[in-house]
Amino acid sequence: MADEAKAKGNAAFSSGKYEDAIKHFGDAIALAPENHVLYSNRSAAYASLHKYQDALRDAKKTVELKPEWPKGYSRLGAAHVGLKEYDDAITAYKKGLQYDPANDGLKSGLADAQASKPRARAPGGDPAFGGGSPFGNMFGPDVWVKIQGDPRTRLFLQQPDFVAMINDCQKNPSNVSRYINDQRMMQVIGVLLGVNLQTAEAGADFPEDAGAEEASSSPSMPEERPRSVPTPTPTPTQAAPVVPPEPVSKPMEVDSEDDELKTKKARKAEAVKEKEAGNAEYKKKNFEAAVQHYTKAMELDGEDISYITNRAAVYMEMAKYEDCIADCELAVETGRSVHADYKLIAKALTRKGTALVKMAKTSKDYEGAIEVFNKALTEHRNPDTLKKLNDAERIKKELEQQEYFDPALADAEREKGNEFFKQDKYPEAVKHYTEALKRNPKDPKVYSNRAACYTKLGALPEGLKDAEKAIELDPTFVKGYSRKGAIQFFMKEYDKALETYQLGLKHNEGNQELMDGVRRCAEQINKMNRGDISADDLKEKQARSMQDPEIQGILSDPIMRQVLTDFQENPKAAQDHMKNPMVMGKIQKLVNAGIVQVR
Image 1 (tube, rainbow, N blue to C red):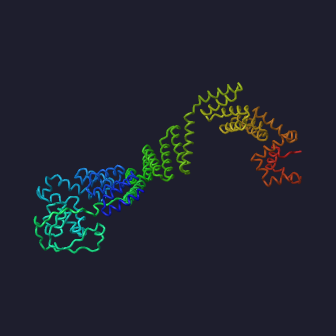
Image 2 (image 1 turned 30 degrees about the vertical axis):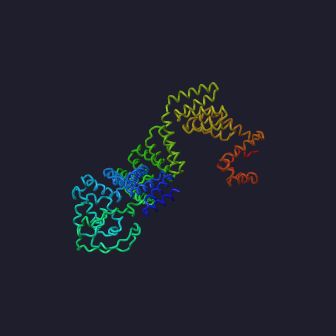
Image 3 (image 1 turned 60 degrees about the horizontal axis):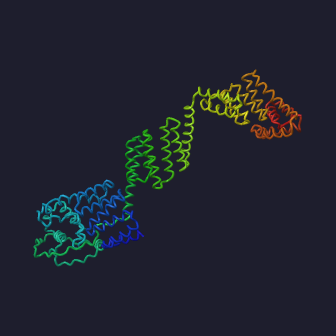
């Protein structure tokens, strides 16, 4: 509905029906009160009717709604000129030029306002003509409107020498005397004074005003009038005062979205050039220059967050991490407001997280970076971001261990765990052993002690893991082998327990605990070989063994399958196989696992 009313207003304005245009633009504003173009158009209509106070009000509203739009300041300046407030007009035009330095309309308006200001201050008009001269304010800013609005002078605007003549008179009204013999100048003076001056072509017929469109579409150029014929200076008897004709042609043009889009497109193109210049400086490591170019691009186009993230990257290279973070936050905020690509927002978040990592000194400092990386991954799951997250979590954990490391406190916690172990308070003992490991994760004795607690609590997998960790930290730590062998024995993995005890004896041949372990394992294995265990125990043992990857590998080996077949069907081949130590080692593992029985 607002667009329809606006279209009607534009049509009325183009036809010179300014009152109707004001009504239609008012209807559009009622439907879309935040549309700055509507206020700008109504301001133009008011100005065309010389209602400059109303034009000023709408121009101010235009600037309020869209302060970065140069055309708004053009409207504001024109209204101030109409009210003869030249200082305010100059200020408005200059403000608009700050947003669009190349805007010809603003430049022209500024020049006219500056030229009109001294003439307005002179008493009675321009002193070049004398205080009471009727030509004092003749060539003001509205001279072009009056010339175009009169059918007798409108076509002169198509003649370059005529335009140059009027420009000269605007700059210095005293130069009118130079052109007084030019019949065109006499016509202009008559139009500007609102009188009908008789010229050498007084008998010529002038068409009625047919509107700006009809006049401007005429394909022919008027013939050059002879300048050698002197024209008598008009006298009061020759001039009959008439009412100045109202200009029906457009004194200015209404705005459309196309105008705004053109300006916006031009600014975007300029922003791209600044970005490319910034990229070039960045590659040369001229970081200060790159920042300047990216900043200019941001000023020209505040909706493209790539300019912001590029500047953030430069700040990163300059080790200005706080500035980098500020730019990344601005990029995210701007990106969400303009619905930017989620990948660009993720990129900004990743860059922020990277800057936080660069600034981090303690494990706690990494928390912010980890949080930001996770947010980036919710926007776009990028492998690079995921790697940065994993690295940050790893470093944070390492720093936590380093910050928490205290061997003295670790020993104190271990002693507390030992006391609770003696009192059969195994959960409490586990708690203190765990704290001791946080304080000193390199102590194999603590792992061994906690493995013993887990064994008492029946948490055999956890105990086995701790025993293996103790052996990993110190391969000569005999107690670790003892713990591991005992747990494997309780899990009825007698063959594995036997291997563990035997490995421990390599480091301490006379260790009684390890020797007792070997003996117990051998007894259980012999019982299995003789079939002295129950069918349920044998079935359980076989099921557990079949889950062992090593046993699975032996049974899936085609050669071993043939060996097992030969043991059943070909005794002679079986004897040959028994001479092979590798084959016999595998057979023994199957026997120990209860898969193969020897009778």
